[in-house]
Image (cartoon, rainbow, N blue to C red; front, side, top):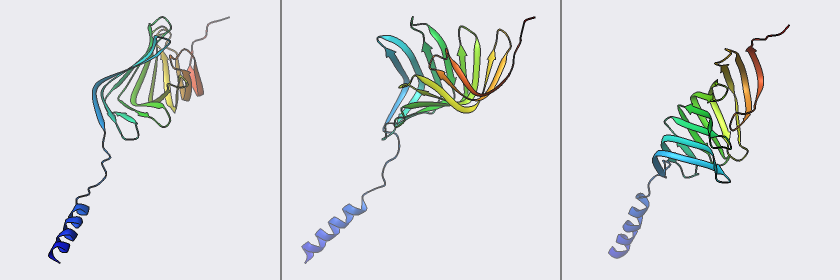
Length: 170
């Protein structure tokens, strides 16, 4: 009888020791650099001070995110900076948030918005949020709600746009 009660108590205590499921990051990486290339040519370079990877393979970038987009010759044509970001593995989309600033080197245009998404699979950048594009050479400003663009911002399609433009002509 004493042996049976000891076995019963031993089994009972094992059940009590089972804790809550851990939902925190499985991996923490400092000074992360991600490189995307096509046919040996660098296309996108992502840098962030910290990356947290979770069980569903999604990543969170709690600090600033800096992205450089390259042309076919390997020259940086566009840079992006944001306060934070994340990678949604299920949708295969990077989402950057907070003071998002995109600078196009060649045209010296600056795009600002609160949130921007990039899909490596489709090589598209898009947002449903309000945004502003200022051309520093001409002082022209385009305001819009929503846009779709190529990943290097070579072509941008605004969804609902208004702006201030300079026209010259007869």
